[in-house]
Each structure stands twice: as C-alpha cells, then as structure tokens.
Image (cartoon, rainbow, N blue to C red; front, side):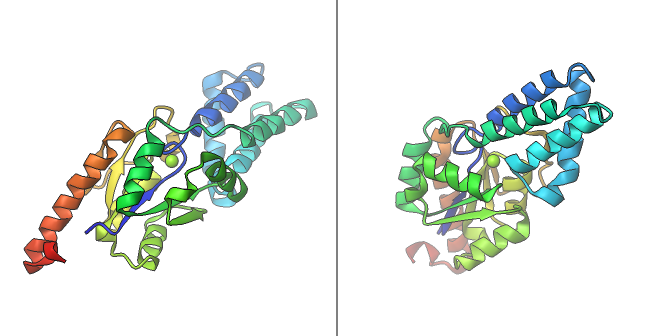
Length: 247
Ligand SMILES: [Mg+2]
C-alpha cells in the first residue's frame, strides 16, 4: 500500500552541511579584520538567500555568495588574494569526501528490497552526481532525480510520473523546508530525520495539519516507522472499500 519511499540525499544519507560550515568558518576568519564573525555570518546568509533564485543551491552559488559578501563586508577593499582564497575554499568543498551517516547503507538496502525507492536531491548537477557515485548507494534506488528546487509541484510531478498517488508515497529527509513541508502539502507522508549541523535556510514551520508527519532521531528507526505508516495506509484503504488489504 506504500508505492514509493523517497529519500533526500545531503544531510539525510551523508554529511554535507558539515563541510559548508567548515568553509564558512574559514571565511569568517578571513574576514575578521573587516567585521565581527556574527556580522560576517549574517551578511553571507543574506547574500545566499538573495542569490538562491539566480544560482540555485550548491557549492558554486555558495562560492559566489562568499565573494559578494567579502566585497560588501570589506567595502570593496578585499583584494585578489582574498578572492583567490575564497575560490579555493569552494574548490576544496567540491572535493570533499562522501561520508555516509550511521546505519544508512544497511537500512537503505533493506528498505529497497520491500519498496520502490527514489533519490530526490537538489544542488549542482556535477557535484550531486559525484556524491551519488562516491556514496555507493545508487544501486539501491529505482530512480534518481537531481532537481534545481524542491517544491510541492516538483514532488507531485516526480510521484505522479512514477504512477503513484502522493498519498501512498513517503518522503524521508532532514529539511523541513525542502523535504518535509512540500511533501506534506501534496498529501504524502513525511519522515523527518534532523541533522545536527543544519543550515538556517532549510528551516520551516510545519503545516497546521501535519497528521502525516513523523520525526525520528536515528536512521535505524526508519524501517519501523515505514511499517507503522504502511499499517495506517492499509487500514485506511480497508476502511474505504472493505477489501483493500487483500489486494
Ligand atoms: Mg538534505
């Protein structure tokens, strides 16, 4: 009765924002002659927020935002040496290793044996492809979608293109804004696994009607949570036509 279990990738299956935070810390140190770290951090975040619509999500956009923020913070006094160091921070980010989060591989392997699994991730195309390949997880997904934004419409298109009613789909991810809330909006189930090094722009408020929202702390709890949802979906289907569970 559950047709699809879909997974976010960054910070759900493997560490990602951890590396952005490290690059950001280096940037704050670079800029300490111009402004306090809290000020630098806020200006950088404002730049990122403004630029998402132009550059999309990912390391290249983040690098351009650091350059723009450096120019603003230094009142155009940042030199080519500073710009070069920022570009190097971005290039180092593009080479960061892929470290799976605890228990991800055995759980994904197990879930993929019982359900149709889809990976839905956003960001720079080349970088997302690199991480997927290095993760060794692509063999567990029936379908991999790399998208530029993760909105309710995007989730609806992916689920319906796969021949599924969103009400029978489960989205698993770390981001309320990009994984959980848009999936809930189209009537899918959502399992939230918060990531300890989260990004401010991924936060959101849950919709008031969040009956299909679940939160777990560890990936290892996922199979039980999916089983509980399957039970609920099956019970609802039986309630509707009196024979759904036998189909
Ligand atoms: Mg994520």
